[in-house]
Length: 209
Image 1 (spheres, one colour):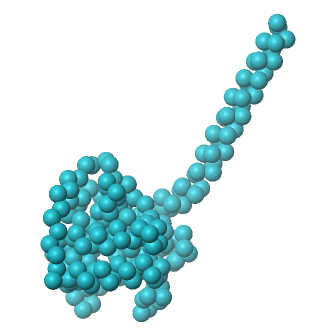
Image 2 (spheres, helix red, strand yellow):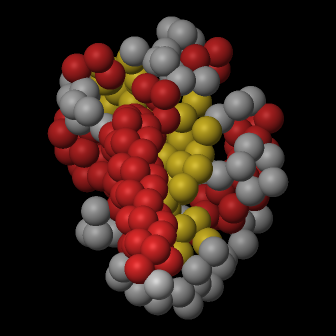
Image 3 (tube, one colour):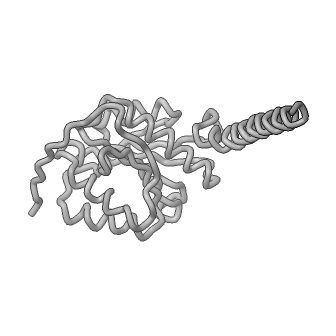
């Protein structure tokens, strides 16, 4: 029997952040997040209302099959998640992505942020295409998928489509990989220059004395 959870969380805009969960230790956070989804959100995520025991088994399977979970965190809790499932788990050999966002943090751009980050993860792993599947009534996710280039079609009560990663613009992860070393080198150069000026000044003062 499903257990009703009372959630007294009050979101604090600006206090959330996104990161990838560690493969085994933190995936119970995904389970807890999925269990907190209201009936409508759970229906959208799993294309039908499913009980708690199914979600617990599903989260355990994600921990074992190499699924990458990008999480939106607030106060140490996962409030939104983007799952990147490995291609071995798909019938057509394409890695698949799935999303879930709790009602308390909707309309704050969480879905777009998760979408960007999971695409970064997929490109980092060398994937060229992604499959996205969502419930046919999940209009917000369908619009978001279309924004990122997915051409969705209806199938068995679901909307499914593919995203061509080779056509995606430069993403946040790539920018970080490229820009961070450059910024670090620039900072090191500036530090060395400052140190050299200090040494030169000290040497000049000693000679003057």
